[in-house]
Amino acid sequence: MARLEKRDEIARAALELIAENGFHGAPMAMIAEKARVGAGTIYRYFENKDVLINELYRDLEERLCSVLMKGYSPEKPLRARFIHLGAAVLRYCIFNPLDFRFLEQFHNSPYGVVHRRDKLFGKTDQKDVYRELFEEGLAQQAIKDLPMVVLYALAFGPLITVARDHILGFVVLDDSLIEHTVMACWDGLKRQA
Amino acid sequence: MARLEKRDEIARAALELIAENGFHGAPMAMIAEKARVGAGTIYRYFENKDVLINELYRDLEERLCSVLMKGYSPEKPLRARFIHLGAAVLRYCIFNPLDFRFLEQFHNSPYGVVHRRDKLFGKTDQKDVYRELFEEGLAQQAIKDLPMVVLYALAFGPLITVARDHILGFVVLDDSLIEHTVMACWDGLKRQA
DNA sequence: ATTACCAGAATGAACGTTCATTCTATGTAT
DNA sequence: ATACATAGAATGAACGTTCATTCTGGTAAT
Image 1: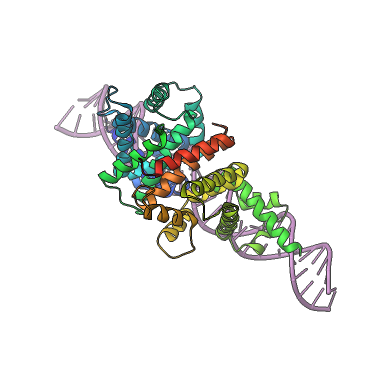
Image 2 (image 1 turned 30 degrees about the vertical axis):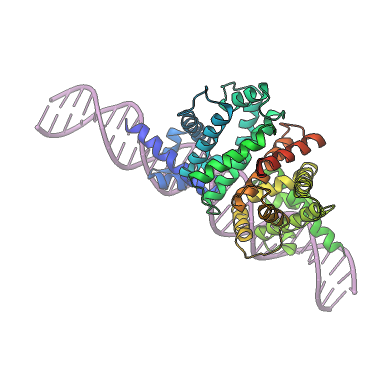
């Protein structure tokens, strides 16, 4: 059963290198060295580099999703739910900077574009907690009547930007600042009185 | 005098390829082919690929800045000025998708991080119209009392996200939607009543 | 004749991937 | 208990390709 352990070593090494140096700064040889295995060994666990990267992403998405849903209660008011989710996302990114940097690399690459297209236009119809939240908000006229994509942008755009800036050391996000940032995002989304 | 023309051909070809395929999808040989010059010729105009990329960026930043300032009047109210700038940024990105894609590639690379660090912490102290706007807004308590970096994130995060989504075809931004998106960003920034 | 310039072949470094070989752990025979 | 046999995991040198950069030979202008 050391098999899973070794797979994990390789995955961790790859994630770390890609997060720090980008896809092209993480050659297979370097991943192998960091994972303390032979270069060829990687191919016993992952068909090729593309597959490795996509599996890293899937694992990560799953982890992030489970964190988001922890303590999420669909009965609470819209705003409270939004702030719960936003703060959770931000906290996850800040405390798992390698994960965040990897996600960014992924999203800013052809892999990410394909993935996002699939997500937006059917294909994978896994229920998306954010989408549900927005649809509910639209229905009860609590948030602005804008296309779903724009709502996503208003919610996530600032969060991703500040998360990056925190990790790069351009700002220090403490609990209070996280809260206030997410509340500001909500102000952007909600219908103004 | 064809010298400048040829430099321009090379620059345009490089920008186009990098915008479409990323830094690693734009080998020098391909740039040369697209510019209809020999591979070695590029090195008569740019010392190496790094220099080429950085000069592309400087040129682009200058162009964008001049577009932003066109029709900008510092006498108008804060909100009107913010919306003018935001809409101008968004329109530029949409109508110059290659420029936008290049900027994204740049910002999501080590080049961009260095550049941003210099910009935030002294080094280059060129006056920044957005910074001035935010400082004025803070002074007259019109916008939220948050760190400058967070204000940037609230203003630009959504704009960059929707610009990318428009270019990828995930949404169609017309004049009205541009306006409403920028107004929503302002709602995020401004102090709520 | 001399100079300036250029195209494209040449170069060497670095990459992802393959594969012949070595190692290891477990089963079998004595 | 010990010696041997074997399946399959692990290895890293080697391959083919691709890249940025340099070199070379030739063309056009003066």
